[in-house]
Figure (cartoon, helix red, strand yellow):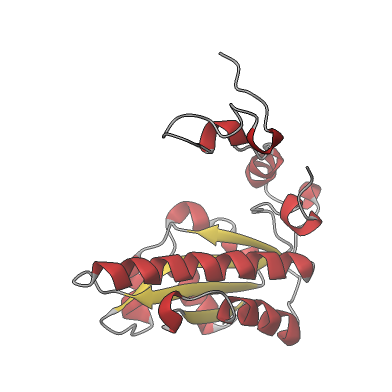
Length: 200
């Protein structure tokens, strides 16, 4: 089985080209991909805070990131904070809002890939700083930041960043994460979908 090339080629880079500028129509296409993602109950709770390298919004988002992410994100062409509803008293809607952010981010990442860019999801930021800096209202929570950049030649980026980008991208085998009949029984142990049996 082969994945679609856009999925197979996706990875979360850090070594971005600090001179690369994203065209407005490319950024708009990435944002539209998020806007058209599935949304629970048609509520559409996701909102986008968008900064382009060099503007005040971009600088404010970088300032709100945790230190490790501040080392490489300034080279991104754009930073997008995905926000959603904060409704802890309504667990169902609270969860739906988080799911919607994930769906939107996934589509944005693939659209970025299609446009020739790389998108790196970031969970390491300080919510209170972003909330204060951008006057994010009560009932809304920043949940994910997306860095969008053009991958640079590894020889031109910080060696530590280049080393992290060279690490192989791995995932658990499908047989370890897919179950059938009962939890823990690998899908494929009975030949389902032709997946290999798991070795003892």
